[in-house]
Length: 419
Image (tube, rainbow, N blue to C red):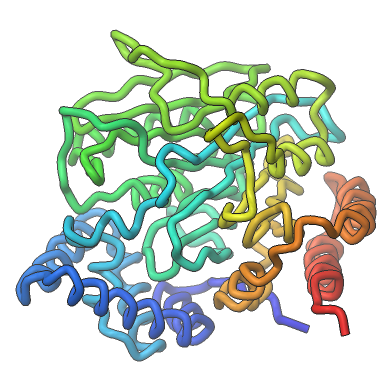
């Protein structure tokens, strides 16, 4: 039985715990990164320069993160500068950090009324070919506890749910002329909002303050799409270039976004992507609940060369149920394709299974390439939905921890290779 790992107490303590848990993963990731840089003939001074730039940024804006990552690197016995450079990679190697299939990400935020849940939020990740893992951080002075989906060795986050009942994600949008290559990567912006904002309004205010202070970067000269939903039922779409941003906030709404800009003073000519259309049709066909959210994450219809919401190459899925007041909010995290793997419920403040943090669950998920195990999924999800239905405002931490531990054990059992 994997222990539940919660990163808590001081930044040094959190970093040491994460570094020890991910030691093998980080060493492998650093070795792959160095080989990639060598292949692309990155100059001898470029990596130290990138590391120096992002270190300066962290020292100004997020000193606790800097302390955490230094201790993490020491515990894993990898160079701190390598972790810094992986989060802010050289332009020559940056394409290897992006999905190989252009414009494949899909996310939605939707208001709903479901046993205390006011909104559901989903993000499917279709790349890059980097280990995806979960992380669970406890609250600290000035920051909120959260569950996050991350890429190995990246200091930031890719999708999150925090203890206040705010969920969010980002991905790169279309090419833009208004770009900047600063070290403030979108993953760092998202972690900043995750730790400090308790609502969509708060996320917008925090983003505006950060944007005024120091413009965030636009990697690969592309704009950035952010999507948030909170426990009041509000959904926020935020689209940004280097110097401009546009936003739309709505309650009792459904917002689906891909890698295309939807807002702006002069909206770009835009055909609705097939995956967006099929997701919208599915979600509007019946009231939204946990079962339909899980089904939505694995919609795999195709239209010619256009993929659906999911396929066997999807790297991870993150579904957040946002409950009133944040109490009892949870994330259903699938590592690997939802077609072949099972979602595990995680709760802010209570930790995540070590196997979901150290990369081992993801590596096993890539070997689970048989999407035909419908009976296995149906049996597992029947138990999952039954346990989720029992969550209420008075649910104790012990009962919520038991849900994570029991479902994690059951998921591993169902996905174990047949003897």
